[in-house]
Length: 432
Image (cartoon, rainbow, N blue to C red):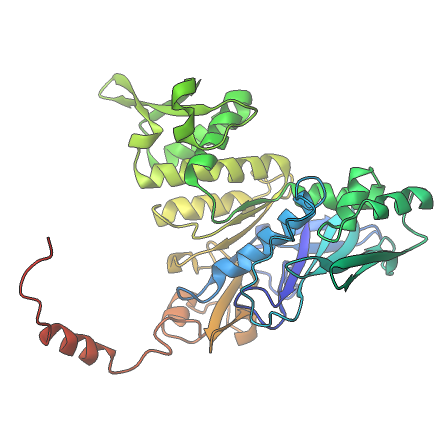
């Protein structure tokens, strides 16, 4: 499970920002929204199954989620997929271009906490580290350093004695580690135990950020076609939005139509038709003819349902888009209840839906805000304002008690300015 994540110098975030999924032990509200995770020391740590991020448009919410997505992509793809001359796919539009971007996670896997992170430039990874805490004390597993020497790179590593396996195998993995790939990924490719645990866990994250809707709808169709229980769960979620949907029919797309449906999955393409019952009659309606809300919900199932079934982290931007607030709340509640989340999946999402700011849906330690001042984004928790248990969080947010509202930096004369521009307009006719 994810314990914490921090990053520095990524997109609109110059300074270090950290999010914690450790539950506030003093908060006794909504106890079902705390996962009691066992540790290797015999103790227990309360972790949150969901956290929400609020803030105005362009504050940096998506950038924060994209930071999580980048860390996942670097771990999952840098060694097996990225080409040697491709660089690190890091967005060069950062606040401090001469300074590396830094990412770090703390995760709890089989009761053991791991701390893993890296520093990255557009051309290479300059530092990388992995530590474990099997008995509560820090153990170094490795630290990797890559120096740039003009047009060449020199990579070395300090390999700790606690990294299981043969040292010669670790050195072989290091030799295969390119400047634009991660040592963790190389070790995992060679089945090194600790690295493989972290690699497999992060690779399984579902980060639905800035990707084509058609690819996600096809992934949902693919999973529904292959796994009957996945189809049943997807259908039950769709019925929340439209009770008339009775079934989902999945079929392969003809060769001459495949190009219109995004990339292939296992070299095959799938499409969905929803069987709807109206006045005793049944008829099929293809995915393309559904409402935006049904489309959004269906595409989310590729991540939400799979995440719940596999106990994975799910990251969703603008979870409320095109959906009724009750549907968004139901999706979140699936993660908050151990009966529907027995494998301890976690959800990180950004939203503008203020009706979710209630103890009926979220604890105080699950609510975070993203704000931007002078072009720089920051992140902070609702807990920093010491809110009362009976406080109206929605009202407090909308009235600016917690900051992070879109009108805070607005010119007070904006209305008069707009009115003046409209009245002085000299456009006499509609454009063709």
